Image (cartoon, rainbow, N blue to C red; front, top):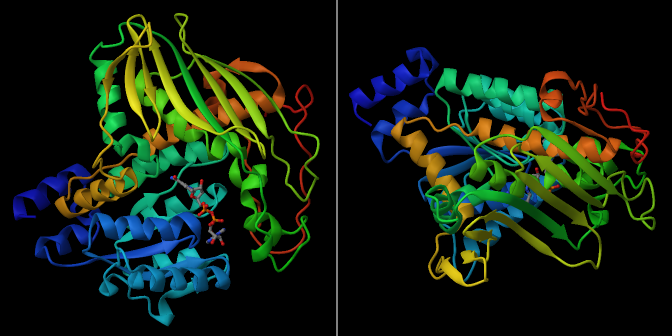
Length: 434
Ligand SMILES: NC(=O)c1ccc[n+]([C@@H]2O[C@H](COP(=O)([O-])OP(=O)(O)OC[C@H]3O[C@@H](n4cnc5c(N)ncnc54)[C@H](O)[C@@H]3O)[C@@H](O)[C@H]2O)c1
């Protein structure tokens, strides 16, 4: 980055002093970006691999997790990555010293006091707004997993974080990876260029056949304990937002990206299959169907399910007067109203979208051209939260009500280990919108 670029970046940031340190370090070109991970299991550690595949000039130097065994897992995975026979990752991308390992509830704060330039954030979603704010206050760029929040209070904090990132010139890319998929990008561009005619209807689907708990990680087998619930965050509404928010946010994000407007009304239904024991299997629903009304007779019909043995299906559709855009990670195409394929994205040699998102983030950091997608992530998170709330309550409501009025806040007042009673399964007709 030359001096003029630095000054331009400073102007965007609004204040020279607010620029993150790395904007200057990047001028040296060869400097490695220093990376810290908060939430060091499945996705957090896979994101390390994806980031290194996107750009070898990064170095993981710090890890933070609630549990020491997850740090062991992360370090084991790093050895696996380095020694992988088919595609080894460079050893000099991993440099985590003992003093840069942090565990416990304040681990994220300690990691943020180090000189990492960039944080990969992949804890359960409920902690995201609080941790993101801390990352930005500490002047760190962030790769942040989805969803952005689990409730209206958290969602409002995301928009505040978006403003803070702008003010500080910090880049934040969210793990809504379909936005970085070349087939999705071209399909959506074709739709916006009018190839489908007028859009008459849309559909978002995430049907998953797995519903499990992470028994092997547990030291405390009591479901009414914080440890059990954080380790099995995805079956508890307070920690995950329910499968509708945690998973289906990906599909809803595509609908918002394609339509470029938000719904007016939401009307959801859902339930939980009878054979899942409570509280061992958490308190979330297993299936949802939600109708989002975008006005002018345009709707999004959305289906989300996690039921063992049921059929898997993950896709989005935009139906138009001239044809339909069908999107999934495996296939992106436009068909006419007789089912004839009008366009299809060749899949051979398509770049990995899970790596592309890191390329975009690193490019933004190195160039000093801030890229902040917190608002996009917040918008799709809000859509997901609205659908869940409507299904839980068994009531239709005006979409704007959620951000304007809802005071729902699932973040525990005290984040600490010990007893944690499990809320009952929401009962439509009895659950109150608040
Ligand atoms: N973009 C994608 O395709 C994708 C795929 C999978 C998961 N995800 C998202 O990534 C996130 C993590 O999912 P996962 O599958 O890796 O879950 P996981 O349970 O495997 O990992 C979460 C990690 O966070 C740690 N953790 C929990 N609370 C913490 C806290 N307060 N402070 C520090 N660490 C804490 C846990 O100990 C665990 O190691 C979720 O939001 C999930 O939706 C995204």
